[in-house]
Image 1 (cartoon, rainbow, N blue to C red):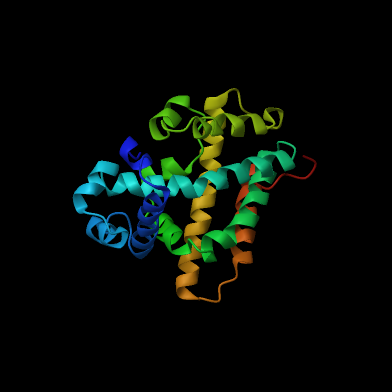
Image 2: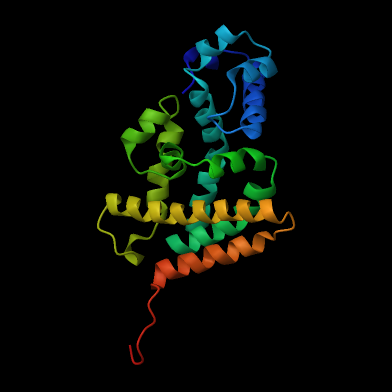
Length: 223
């Protein structure tokens, strides 16, 4: 996460760095992105960059965490609107956010994120109920640390075959794997056909979570 020096910068200078991050990380994946390009766009000396961030990965995930903050709140709201039904809440959430991901103002950034997803990025995308994880990634903000607990409390546990928060975390991993795979496939389809309709991604997602909820085996007559 950023150093205290970054947070002491004028808001305008902080925003300039984030705007530069958006431009560069939308142009290239994290692996291929250039700090030289970022400092040039932000109009700061290269040495100053390392006073604010440890490396480009540090900036990348800080920028991403800022984007996903509202997204996590939206997920909480949709689960609450579904009266704690985790699967229905995810369905409502995915249906509303998919157009923003695929065609919104940050679509290029998200495309590079999802098309180059590795374990670390996947871990950051998936909501966690671990206090230690939130302290590690969000030590500057207690509000973010509490997000996992709020999400946990919004789920009606009685509807799920789970015993504790660890098992709920495993369910969340399954749900996020479905989200990520569906988004990645949608980007591949868009690359092949720019007229690709996002309703197909929604239909694919709903089919996958239906399989998760009810299973993929046909029931025998009378069952």
